Length: 136
Image (cartoon, rainbow, N blue to C red; front, side, top):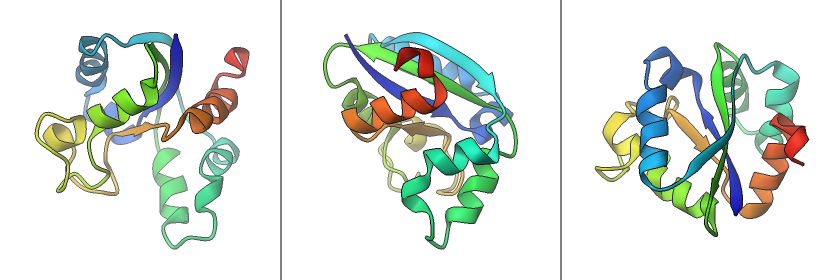
């Protein structure tokens, strides 16, 4: 089994979309193997988004992900689970996300696009280690 990491972001939690998002993952034969509703602190957010440090949007990104609770998930599936999740998520910009994807159907704006998913097997391993070290 292959694992990846997902954040159901604060905007999705605030809009009560947790069930809809998890249902879409499960309909694709993916399994939630760890879940925690957590207020992400600044230090953890900075560690998670370290590759964006120094970019113009970095401060807004940290403020957004720490503003209210997010649902952190470890998702398991058959081979390249991260790719399956990324396809289900849709394009980062909801205006470009295909209908049928989470962002295409449910997201409103790019700065609040509901969901984060690891963008590679290596990122999944790193992110799971940050948020669920017991899986590391």
